[in-house]
Amino acid sequence: MNGTSESQQEASHMKIILNARTKLKLGFWNVRTMYEAGKQAQVLREMKENKLHILGISECRWTGFGKNLTNTGDTIIYSGRNDDKHQGGVAIILNKSSSKSLIEYNPVSERIITAILNTKPIKTSIIQVYSPTNEADKEIKIEFYEMLQAEIEKIPKKDLTIIMGDFNAKLRQDNSGFERIMGKHGCGIMNENEEHLVDFCGLNNRVIGGTLFRHKDVHKLTWVSPGGRDKNQIDHIAINESETVDEQWQEVEDLFKKTSEKILSFKRQKHKELIKQETWSLIDNRTELKKKICNTHSDRLKDRLRDQYSNCNKDVKKATRKDKKDFIEGLALEAEKAASEQRMGDLYQITKKLCCQKRNTNMPVKDKQGNLITSEREQENRWNEHFKEVLNRPEPETTANIPIAEHDLEVNIEIPSRSEIIKAVKSLKNNKAPGNDKLSAELFKSDPTLTANILHTPFKKIWNTHARQKLQKNASFIGLNINIKKSEVMPLNTTEPPLIDLNGTPLDCTSSFTYLGSIVTSERGAKTSEPE
Image (cartoon, rainbow, N blue to C red):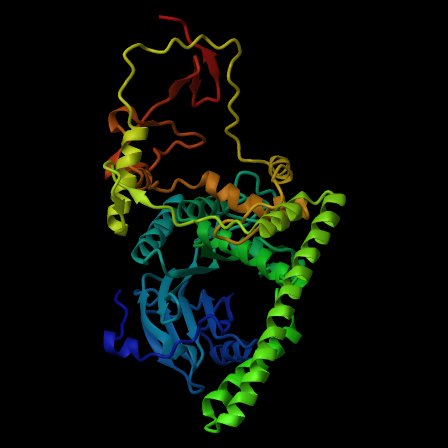
């Protein structure tokens, strides 16, 4: 089957229905059939009453494939069988506004149809499916998921992908081992189709949305037997887990910042002025007298103004000396109060201000001959040269004699628990400068338990994500040479080799290494090495 697509010029002028300021409402429905009189009108009416932009249809029972425009301006794209048998079939209905964003669609089979929409900041791909029933042959199920996998691989990873429809899969409430894929609010007993769906979502980093949040059963049960005796949740929606570690940390950062601004607001630092407002008034008066002297042509009037200027200048100097004396006395009283209240930080700052000692932060960089270097490029090269000499030392002539460890080394390779995060948060020191995220330690320590609950999710993702490391780039910047032949990687909690390389050369894997006389293995064991 072949779908239709718009030209690149037409796609650039398409209306964008989804962005950061708009909401897109979509649904999916197994209508059992649309191949009967009046059924299409009923479906369109339900779609309008629920204010849906997009509606996915399973088991529409239309044959062939195509794109229809209804009397109400809605667009229906459908895909069915080619043998004139009115069985199966899937369709996607777009209302009048969202149909203008349709870039292309692909009728894959009577069980799968895809549509690509022009949305911002990324494009959206919608896949409507109708999975074989649980009683179907295993070969049919495998063929269905192979076709679905082929369509997933065609979609760019940066796009938002929505897979929805009738999967004929019952999802249980126990999500042990599948926490990243499904939630704890499924309905029913696990069947074979659930295994296929969970495996597919795990392979493609998809999350099954209908199980993540608590809802009433009446809102989750999507299939009712003709007699009304059996009810199941077999229709599901799965979206790509596109949120990266950086995005998760950005959410944490925004959460702490917005809460701090709302509850604590900004601390406005009040600086005591050395010169009081009355003295500034005298200074302004002296400036006006100076202007009058310059603009006056009469000698008699100039002499009178000069006398006034002289007296005013004496008053300014006298007031300035008094203000300085009062300022220093005020600082001394503050220092005395801070010392009595054991506020050593404030006492240090006041003492430094009284001593008038300013630290020169612009330290000069000199070459080996002692000549001053002013160019930033030359300074960077000099630092590079310095670290190369400091960090890359020649190998010692005699090998260090490291005694055998008396006790085995216990290495904890599990995901950091909430209790460990709480302990680490409580150990943070106060009054330390924050990092680039502008989050101080006091914010995290205000409620260590809540902080641990917030940080546990991104920490878990960091622990489980096998991301490519940028070791060589950071090492070469400071002049540190890493020997590829002497560097190995020991994978933990995974059967896949880690994706870590240096300058494009992948590092070899190892199952053990020696540390302080103990051999640490990937099976979380440590044993004492025998002396050679």
